[in-house]
Image 1 (tube, rainbow, N blue to C red):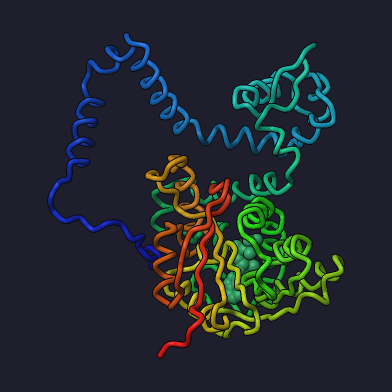
Image 2: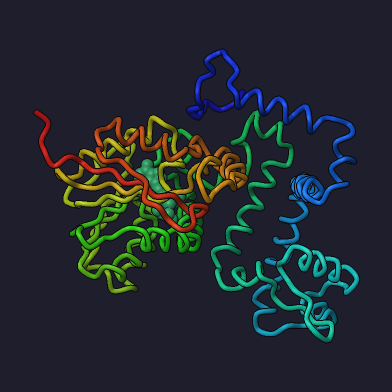
Length: 397
Ligand SMILES: C[S@@+](CC[C@H](N)C(=O)[O-])C[C@H]1O[C@@H](n2cnc3c(N)ncnc32)[C@H](O)[C@@H]1O
C-alpha cells in the first residue's frame, strides 16, 4: 500500500479546452508527423531545434550514467587532486589504482560532461563544472548522499508504490509521520549524520538569503529547524547587532551548542530544544526564519509550524521562509523546471513532505494570518526561493 501524501494544488480543469490546449495538441501532432524529423534537418533554424530536442531526450536517457561518472570522480577525489595540479593518465592511474584503460573511459566521459578538461602534454585538469566541486565540500557530500536516493529508485515503479522502504527514509528519522521528539537509543547518530550534511550543504542557501534580505531593522532572530547553526553563525557575522534563538530537536541542538561555543557565539544565541509538532515556539524574536524546513513536512504540519510562528511573533514581526520551491516556467529568466523532478523524488523518498510552489506557500502563510506576503527576488532560485510575511501592527478588533 502506498503512503498517505498531500496533493499539489494544480489549477482545476473547467471542462472546456483553452486556446493553449488547442496549440499544444497541434504541436503534438506536428511532433508526431513521420516526415517532420527529416524535413526539420533541411533548414538551419529547425535543425537547431530538432538537435536540441534530441539532445535533451538523450540526456534524459543517459542521466544515470552522468551521475555515476560524477560519483566516481568524487569517490576517487579527482576534483581536489586535479585542483592541486593537472595530471596525466599514468599518474592518475597510479593514484587511483585503476587500470589506465578503464580510468581513461572515466576521464574522457568527465571531459565530455564538462567536469574535466584536456590540457597540454596529455594531462587532465578541472573543467568549468569541476571547479565548484573542488571548492565546495558540501556538493561532494550531496553527490555521495544522492547515491542513497538512486539506490531507492532502482525500480521506479516499485519506489512509487512504497517509497519509504529504502535508505533515504531511514536516513531522515523525523520525516515520515512519526513523532519526532523522542529519538530511540541508537538513533542519535542519524541526527548527527543528517545535521552534518545539512551544515555542509547550506552555504549556497545562506548566501542567497544574506544577499537578498536586509536584516538591519531586526533585533532578534529565531531560526526554526536551525540544525547545527550554520545560518545563525553566518548571519551573526553579517549583522553583528542581532541576537538569536535557535529551535530544533534536542539531539540536534546538542550538536549546535558545541558548534556555537567553538565560534564564540554562546552569549548571542539561546537554544530552545523542542518539537514544533508538540511545543509552542519561543517568543521574543521579531524575525522568525524557516530555512529548508517546510518542504520536509506534509501540509497539515506546515500549517501548524506557520501558525506557531505567527503566534510567537510580536505585532509587526516578520516571517522569512527560504527553501527550494517549484520553479515556474512562466517566469521571466527561469524556464528551467527540470530541477523540480529531482526535488519531487527526493522529498518523496525522504518522507511525507513535498515541493511546493511559492504561491502555495504564500497562500498557507496568508491563511494563518500573515499580511503583505511577498517574494524576495534572489539571484539563484535553484538553491532556494525566499518568501516574507508580516504580522499586522494592529491588534484584530
Ligand atoms: C532539512 S533540515 C534543515 C536545517 C537547516 N535549516 C538547513 O537549512 O540546513 C530540517 C531541520 O528541521 C529539524 N526538525 C525536523 N523536525 C522537527 C521538529 N518536529 N521540531 C523541530 N525541528 C525539527 C531537523 O532536525 C533539521 O535540523
